Image (cartoon, rainbow over all chains, first blue to last red; front, top):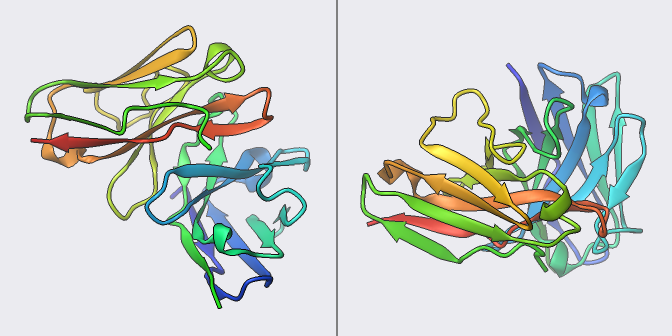
Length: 119
Length: 110
């Protein structure tokens, strides 16, 4: 079965760090563009980052310099390292796949993991 | 923050049709492909339409997509209670060098 499973969310104090994981099954992470999207409580979807097949990355202005996306090919897993967290980063974080067979569409989504930044 | 504008809500009776608009610009919709997502309450988004007007396997033909210029439209015919959800458009923005999503539209079945 093709699926993504996120983990690593939780309650973290302002200024802290957290690393999210996104384990893939049924397909190869490194063969696709992999995306992080977040959704603040009661709000819409916000793109966070993309990791390209070649390993390069792009980030939203709101997280650039604080968040880092990476992958471990041996574990077929995507990561999001989040540093200097603030209340504005409180959200459900989803990982998603942008397959080569579609143009900028996200066909597989994880179930999401909640990150709460609060003292 | 969203660069793609959608109506906050649309509603119709069961069996009727609704359309959801998504307005952007030449840096996003005008020169890139549009996708549409359905988000049922408490769940992750699900891809409904890709490449402007294509349905993934398993998506019923009650859902359709179109694009014209810098706007896109999602249509839902034969509305069902199970269609009550939030719907988002999405695309790539060449100026921002990132994905962008619409503001989201809540569909209510009366």
